[in-house]
Amino acid sequence: MATTRLPSAGFSITIRISIPADASAIGRLTTCVGEAGAIVTALDVVDSDPVSVVVDLTCDTADSTHADDVVKELEALDGVEVRKVSDRTFLLHLGGKIEVSPKVSLRNRDELSRAYTPGVARVCLAIAENPADARRLTIKRNTVAVVTDGSAVLGLGNLGPAAALPVMEGKAALFKRFGDVDAWPVVLDTQDPDEIVSIVRAIAPGYGGINLEDIAAPRCFEIESKLRELLDIPVFHDDQHGTAICVLAALTNALRVVGKQLGDVRVVVSGAGAAGTAIIKLLLRQGVGDVIAYDRPGALHRGLAGLNPSWQWLAEHTNIGGYAGDLRGAVRGADVFIGVSAPNLLTGDDIATMAPDSIVFALANPDPEVDPREARKHAAIVATGRSDQPNQINNVLAFPGVFRGMLDAHAESFTDDMALAAARAIADVVGEERINPTVIVPSVFDPRVAPAVAAAVRAAAHATAAAAAAASVSHSAEAAASTDAAELAVPGDLPAGASTVKQRSATTIR
Image 1 (cartoon, rainbow, N blue to C red):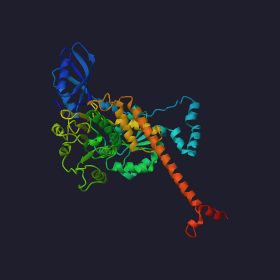
Image 2 (image 1 turned 120 degrees about the vertical axis):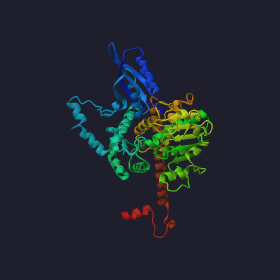
Image 3 (image 1 turned 180 degrees about the vertical axis):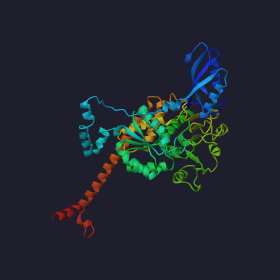
Image 4 (image 1 turned 60 degrees about the horizontal axis):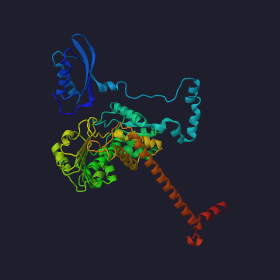
C-alpha cells in the first residue's frame, strides 16, 4: 500500500533479499518498492549462484510503519526471500556519534611532562594569576556546552535527558563539521529552571559558550534570561535564535524574489513557543509590517485572557488589527505563513486564499503544517525543514558560524545585532543574481556559509564592544567633568557647612 507521506533518508532501510537468477527479478523488486511509495536509493549484488542472487536493496520510506509495509510487499512476491532488514539510522547511532581526540602527541616522557605533570602546573598557576588566560591556554577558547533537560526533544515532546542524548550528539557533530567548534552534550536529569541555571553556572568556567537545546517553553525563556545575567560567556538558545536567524535569511531572499518589502507584508506565525517567539521578535526588530501569532488559545491579541508572560508580550506587540479567529482565517490575505508548530494544519485551498505571490514556510518536521506539494500549487515560494525538499530551512546554516564568530571575538554575550548580521550573511551567500523560487537559502554544505556568518558575527561583536568602550569612556569623562566642576566651586556657591572634595581631603590630612 502506497503512503501519502513523503519518504525521507531518516527512515532509510537496507533489505537483504534472495531472488531467482532471472532477468526480470530485480525489476520486479524496484517496481514493488516504487508502487509501495518508497524511493530506491541503491541496489547492490552481494552474492550469487546459478539459481539465485542475493541483493541489498536500500530505500527511503516515510516512517517505521511504512518501512514494515514495504517489506511485507516484497515478501509477497513469488520467489523472494527477505533475509534481513537493517534500519540505517539506528546503525549510524551505534556507540554514539562523537568522541574525544587529543590535539597533542603523547609519545614519550618529554611530551607527557609538558602536557601533564609537572609542566602543566605552571599553566595552572598562570591562569590562577590571570583567569582571562583560560581562553588562551585551555579548550575554553573553542568549546561549547550543548545543554538540555530533554523536555522538548525535536517535535517529540518531553522524552527526558537520556532520550535527548542522540540529538545533542548530533548537534555536537554539526558544530565540529561546519564550524570547527568543539561541543559536548550536557544532558541534565532535572527540569527545574533554578536547578538548571545553577548547574550551568557551575560548569561554565570550562566553556566559551552555552548552547541551550530542546528545552520547553516558557521555561527556556527564564533559563536563558537568568544565565545571560550570570555568565560572562554567550548563551544561545538554538531553538529560538538559530531558527529565527535562518527564517529571516530565507524570508529576506524570498521577498527579493517576489518583489515585496518586509515593512509592507503581513506575516502569520503558527506556533508561539520558543522558535515562533524568537522569529516574531527578530522580524519586529527588522521592521516587519504586521505579525499575527497563533497557538493553542488561538490568534494572540490584546483582549485574550489567561496568557502566560511570553504570550502576553506577543499579544501586546503584534496583531495590529486585533484578529481573534482561527488559523485559516488568519492566513486569508496574508503575504507570508511561517509554521513552527504541528503537521497538516492547513490545506492547499487555505494557501490559495493568501495574497498574490505568497510565501509559505512550513517547518514542522517530519510532516509540515501543509503538504508542500499542495502549497506549491498556489504559493510563489515554499520552504520546509526537510532535506529532501527545495529551500530547506535548517539551523545548521546559523549556529556553527554564530558560535565560531562569538568564540573568535571572545564575546561575552549574544545580541540582536549579531542575529541580524548572521541572517544578512546567510541571505547574501546565495547572491541576488542566483536566487529564485527554489533557491532562497544556500545549501547547508556550501563551504562559504559558516565563514561568512562567523565574519559577520565577529564584526557585530567588535562593534558592540567598541560602542560599550566608547560609552564607558564617555561616562568616565562626564564623571570626571562633574568632579572637576565640584572641585572648582567656591565655598560661597555651596550650602552652609558644605565643602569641596579638596577641602575635605585637606581637612582629613590635617
